Amino acid sequence: MTFEQLEISAPILSALKKEGYTHPTPIQEKSIPIVLEGNDLLACAQTGTGKTAAFSIPILMQLSENKHQGRRKIRALIVTPTRELAIQIGESLNAYGSELNLKNTVIFGGVSQNPQVSQLQKGVDILVATPGRLLDLIGQGEISLKDLEVFVLDEADRMLDMGFIHDVRKLLKLIPTKRQSLFFSATMPPQIVELANTILKNPSKVEVTPVSSTAETIQQEIYLVEKQNKNALLLHLLKNPKIETALVFTRTKHGADKVAKFLTKNGVKAEAIHGNKAQNARQRALTNFKNKSIRVLVATDIAARGIDVDELAFVVNFEIPNVAETYVHRIGRTGRAGNEGKAVSFVEQDEVAYLRDIEKLINQKIPVNKEHPFVPETPFDMSAKAPTKVQQQRPARTARPAPAQAAKKAPRSNKQRLTR
Ligand code: AMP
Image 1 (cartoon, rainbow, N blue to C red):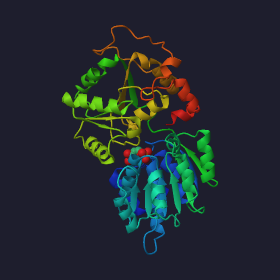
Image 2: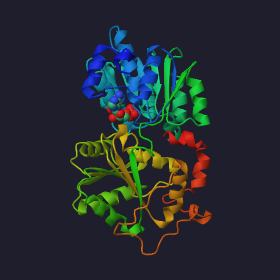
Image 3: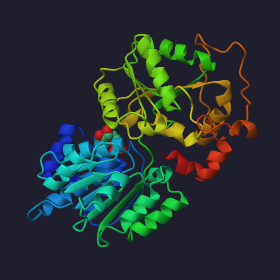
Image 4: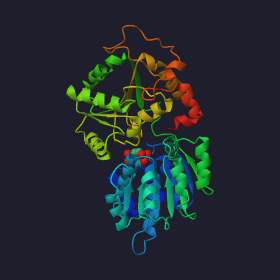
């Protein structure tokens, strides 16, 4: 299948060519015709599958065919959970619509609203927004959605995880009932299905497996290592000049800062991004990482959501996540679009139980590297079970719920979980 066969208009075809896209991805192949028909869409697809283009391309086509009269009015609204995702969607719209006369703007919280308001006042056709700032500006009368034609809810399951579901419900009362709605979610737990039912009318359903599943293009490896040796092990791995850039995950903001500081002190250019940093500092770090002026980006899970770095080949789980799905999500940052990627995880004794939980979820055993200089002197007990009740009751900052608890929170089938 080609983009031409999907009957994409010439200006968008030309823009896609400039982006280097030769063929539509499966989600694009399935979704674009449905959206162009004007139908509602329920899509089960995660980041990395090309879902942004799957909704952006037909929206751009539709809006450019029906020219706006007079001042631009918001005719498409895309709501997404994080600032990073919002910015990326804005960038994608700019890229795919570079040869069209359509305007989009991106609004999100954590920064001054004034520049966003002045963009809105100039008139936009497409608005990309995170829920909180969107509701604020609607409340202030800066945004009118009465001309809305298309509504997209992106990463609905993350909205739920991040506690935005009430905001989304509020928003639904503020948008026209006569509209086209597109709903994207990586997983479809019952609450999400219920939300989709309230938003969509007779939706067509599409589902894709990720371009890069954990099994296919990503080489995974476990390094068993004492906590106090993790920094040194990271530095050791980074001696390999073949690793041009690396994304390192830590569990806490403080941990991210500490690792970045350690690397910098030891001659590796690194920066940390996490929720405590101002939005422009996070954006700057991300840009520095993308243009390779820093080699290592250290991130917490929330800050890393939506990070999309082409050809990211190396992901390090400095601390492995206590929720198994997060592992799949983290390592999904590498090996995108069929590129080879490597994901290594540093596992200390206390994390063995989490490792077992991850292996159960992905249904494979991750090989252990036994050759590194920091192999623990006393072998780890690899049969370790989830933490006891006493350990679970640690203070919130360090508490790590047992895998069993996490599973209870998100009762998904293995198949559903693996699509993340
Ligand atoms: P997304 O799932 O929207 O986050 O997209 C993941 C990545 O795939 C982004 O870097 C896109 O630029 C890229 N991408 C999307 N569609 C295509 C395509 N048809 N061909 C090549 N790359 C694509």
